Length: 430
Ligand code: ADP
Image (cartoon, rainbow, N blue to C red):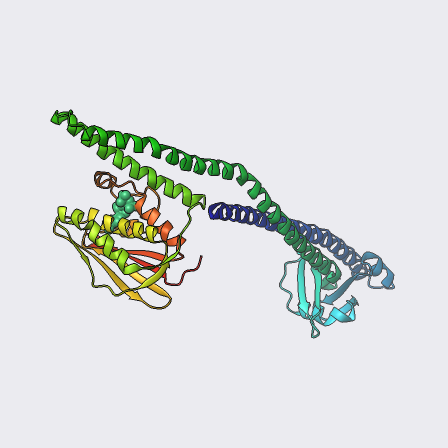
């Protein structure tokens, strides 16, 4: 059943969407957490190093005569770190170079330095050959009698950051794999969930088919019995005869409903068979117009069939006749006295034949147009019931059209009229 397939896909899709959001949030949070912990650890190291370099430098500023021991700076920093110390005039007085790969970039960062003292910042830059370099830097000011100096301490964290990037890509990749697996599981689970619902649905369809089938015989017996009683001359009492007539008319309504229900139930079970024959559509249309004329005249409605030319189509004669009857019957039902109903051919060629049933009746509001083919849908329930309708007519009509691989459409203007158009294949093969 299409409806189950669609529900299954919708359920699986909704599940996949939720999983996708969930995974995206997890990956984002993990990425941010890793980034944060890496940054804070490195920043701490950098700050400590800056502190160390500053201390050593301070010592030499206060003791200008002491012999400078570069190793003391080295110990304060370490080999992955670099530092540059400028005096108040902006002259570079002491340094441990950053690697050649990044030094130019580091110098440009120092030139544009706007970060507050003690703050740690990450700088990224791609060089001419597209390599992305990442450095983390901080600054510190120290002053002694000899003047103020600025220390820049930094660390090359390119490898760390590219490691983090790779880890994030790996997470995204794993996330996508997990999502695919979860979607497959979702689809499978949705299918399993739907099994009992499907079974219940099948049972209910079977019940409708069986019940309507079983009801036909007793109804036929009641009908025949009422006919028999009416034919009996010994029943003369007019009241009794009226009761019998009413009984017959109610049984007739019920028989119609039961046969409609049976038809719908069979179409659900794919048990509706079409007997395709080459028939003249003209004849069917003429027959129906002739048959329905008395009913139209009783309501003072003009029922017109156009002058038809012969058009042969491959179809199930009985079913197409039923379809035309439903449309003409509705047109008469929903048209007030003095109106008209026109059954006409729109066009016919080698591939398709199109005919329409148009009336000058009450029309259908736009919001109801899409629903009139649904089962038991009636725009005005009271009116429909009064006319003997049960809301199954158009549902059956569209089933019949579907069985013929055709199309049915409706156009309507409230208060002005309605037109149903049917398109059938002329060379249908089944
Ligand atoms: P019903 O047995 O109630 O006529 P149908 O399935 O045949 O059921 O039609 C569904 C509803 O569509 C009707 O109740 C009616 O409101 C509307 N309808 C169908 N045909 C026409 C028409 N020709 N003009 C106006 N309304 C219509």
